[in-house]
Length: 535
Image (cartoon, rainbow, N blue to C red; front, top):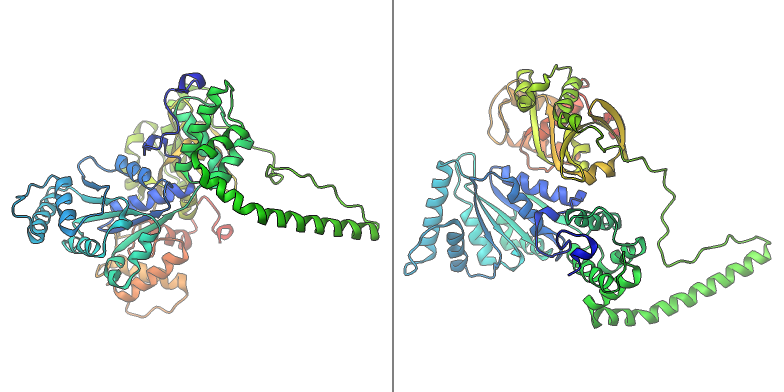
């Protein structure tokens, strides 16, 4: 109704889980990174919890946009099922035919196992995603655990992603579900948005819907955070109602009063009752404050101290901030923008003292391999990139949806030094985040003999390298001859190291753990942050 009035191409605050509208706060990037980690792992359970409306389902849909098209996905939305109903639903979602007149639990399990063996043989990964998983009964959860028993020597044949409210984590901590809980390889709790993120969230959805201007006043945004506590679904409902109210008043921007009225319409009498029950407490608080102020005035007069005037306002006063850094991520030359990929890769390879031919951008990882390096690619948050601490090429989008690349060279708290086309610039990190969905590419140097992920019972010279360097890092004695088998003792050392470095302590030595070890033992590798400053 109001879209044409405001110049919107579509409704910006729908509650449908459209991945295009997903605002990637640091929390959401971390959550998505955990889901991707679970998908790319050798199998098990991945747990994503969060309160109602925080964006769990939308993040999962974003994951589905990232995974290979030849994956087999089963998505269950209503998990209030018996064991038999769950198994039948899994068969339906995977397209497994079954005889409805002969549908015992054993029959279902046999059919599902046969399907998983066939998909594995075909090189297809099978993933089961269950939304609102807090509604699963203990019997159903135990049956899910049994389904993940089917495995090869290296892989479980079924990946399970559980999305649910916080009580799901409590349920999985019960003693009867300890075996399932031990199979959770990645877990993340998604909280509400901060006040800063609420402003960015609203502007992001408006941008996706077709306009690049603020339709909400600053006071309206502050009030929006106050009403919603940063829960995206509540933000959507109130903003939609507020835009409608602004349209009917024929105003250009949503005011604080219009937003407050919209919130009252959304929450109804319940919100008003909550206000009424707090009025007595507020009155007593104000009375106490008046008495305290009266006492201060008397004391100030007695000691002849002139009190500093205090501004009373219903707006939250921001702390003084440093002068803002201009947004330096706008391209003037579209031709150079089209070449930003090769220019950015060239900068990153130069940091490793490697020549990079601009025409070979598509073969960047092959060039890395030829020079003893490997690529790491995927989706991460800015905090995660700080932690992994390597110069990185980022894929960004401008306001018109055009893709371009930059090289992130160094980071501090609020700014980054980047390679931007043929220039070096200092930019605000918030400006990078506004254009970045998490795509990155970085380089790292594997040790000699490293062929892939190291896990329990792995044997080879690279285990000797790992044991030697962890002993050096942990300042523990090294027993000769050095054992080349990845045993339980070394696994515990790895987990201890991973915890210290802020990694998932799974005891599995993949590229990320290797990168962290290299950062400590090899002073020649380029880093985003000086290791001494980081520590």
